[in-house]
Amino acid sequence: MGKKGKKSSRQADGKKAGGDRSIAIYTHCRHHFHKTLKKLSHDAVVSNVRKGYLQTTLCISEYLADGPDSQDPENRRFLKNLVNEGLVSAVHEKLNRCDESIDALSEGAGTVIGENGTLLTLTSDRNIEGSVIVPTIWLNLLIRITKVSAGSLKVSAGSLDPITQKKCVNLISNEIGKFVLHISDDVKCELYQSKDYWIQCACQFSLLLFNLIAQPTGVIDVEVTRALVKHEGLLSFLVRSIFWESNRPDIVALADGNSSVLDQMVQDSSSSIEGSALKKIGFASAGILAGMMTAVQKESWCKFYYEIEDREWIGAAASTATTNTLYDASCVESFVSGMIRLLKTKPTSDDAGSWMDCLQRTVLAGCVDADVIKGVIEIGNQPFHSLQKAVHICRAAMDMMFTVDDSPNKKNVPSDTYLAYAVSKGIIEMFLGFLSRFGCVGDIWTIALSSVDMISEASNQPKTSKALRYLSKKKEFEIALVSAERDPKFNCREGTQLLSAIRWVVPSAERVCLGCNKTIPAKEAKSCSRCHAIYCGRECQVSHWKVHKQQCKK
Image (cartoon, rainbow, N blue to C red):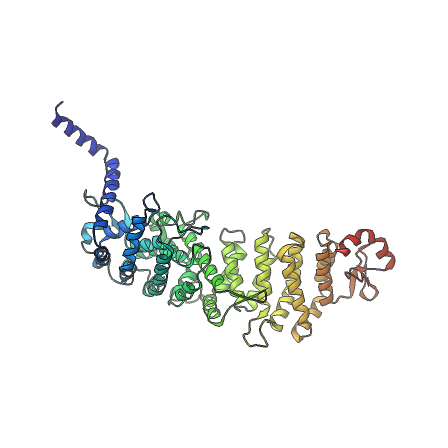
């Protein structure tokens, strides 16, 4: 066969192996575009992004992707120069014009966007083949600029140097306001005149927010957090996105129509969470909110608190309705109430930890009412076996009994109203249940004892005193306390100390002897002079000393 025949044969084989040839063209042309991009001046590259040349934007995003070439110092310098020329601002110009059509923002849109207006499918040999969602290509560029390595002090492969990256993070956090306002409208659900763009961008936006508040050191950035919460609609977007899967069937249907695209977007970011893309978005939003609240948390004299400006935005988030009232005018459920509902109905869910973090910190900020106190206690009385969750509930329970007051002589003073209501709803019984389940060790015992001491300090207040007198007459409480005194897990110094503190603050007509477990009138009870353990008489105390002395001496 001649050369001409061999050439025709190779062409025929190439047409048959169309998929392999497409991959080869993509690999070749990506390298070609990288080389071509570097030949352009920095201002010319940024100008192309401003004009909406998607090939240029995609190529820059490729530079930032993890890969063997991303560690090249020359690439890092090139990207830094692009940032200094205004790359981030150029992308913001596109994102902030999200009420216009995508065609109006991309020069030559007909040659780079598919027939349905959503896919970038470039097929000529001088272009990149592939499928890239528009306009999430702009958000994806910002995500890769702000990307950090989880659990590492070093920037990830493909990232900018820390100083340039920090500059980009601050710029994005301050300039993204208009885009936030549009994407938070989950009734119209439209960006760039398309509902598909909205749901895709909502997914990408959650990933971007996570990158913005995270830092290579693992510490949440306070400055970035306070810049973000100033944007109208950001808190409502985060709160409502947690409940989209359960409250918004229209958004669920929209996500199902874009399921393949959304699954691809979230598969790397939330691989530990099973479920739909909307569930993963909700999980990310809860984590972002909890992280932002943690970032602005202050500590003084071993107590945590929030400054006034931070309490204001946390309070605004706590009172935000879980469903947009323009969609459902009858929705009266607040974010805090929604967290309690989710923790009651799905106590073992993968994202329960993030929900509990949000609930605990909103309570710390003073977002407390009767329903919150009742709800936290009901969650604590559920039969779960997670020590971490129990610690979260104990901390939330202790925080909700405080009146958060910034006046000099009333700061951190227990609230008579909150304490009385918590006592009447069974907060002491809840602590006893935790200690019986997990033992008198760790943070649970410390928090329980501190809470009982707090109740003791307020026992002379009218409402708390009345609640304690009522509790002392409840047969169920006495049974719970006697059961705890007979429980082997309380047969230790910590357990005896806690039970003695409870007996002190809740006077009862009867006591239980530690030696013989006999119930005796309180007036006839004797106590150990060292640890105040209860005995029916001296003889019983002496006979029990061989057992009791080891714990008493500790």
